[in-house]
Length: 141
View 1 (cartoon, rainbow, N blue to C red):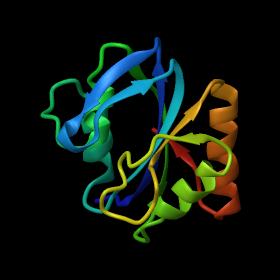
View 2: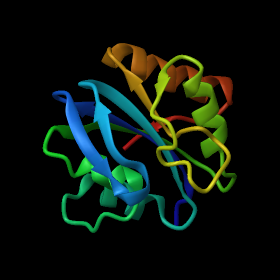
View 3: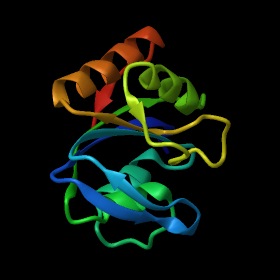
View 4: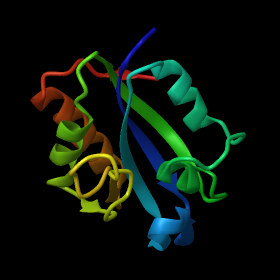
């Protein structure tokens, strides 16, 4: 079974106010592109398919965003690895983007695992540069 870390590239078609669980409450999201960094140390393929599905219970912060009618995953970049590099990727991406505070990072000491970009090319370049800098093989799902 594949293990690894991934970046979801999400297009939010219009400004949206979305309730993200009970703890975070309502967040105002600007239209544009978001990168969500996650990992799957059991089955990477099952996790990615879950993210792509609309038929799921809201369990993680990202589920609330993905189930909003204005959001859509445009690409998924990932690396196969038994080493958890999720936080290293998130820290690198955060240097060139706006963070959504406390999103997807309740089980680590990162400020966020969700990052905003106005432009899709900036988002993709950031992902590719991060994987290159960390010497990770990048794949597209």
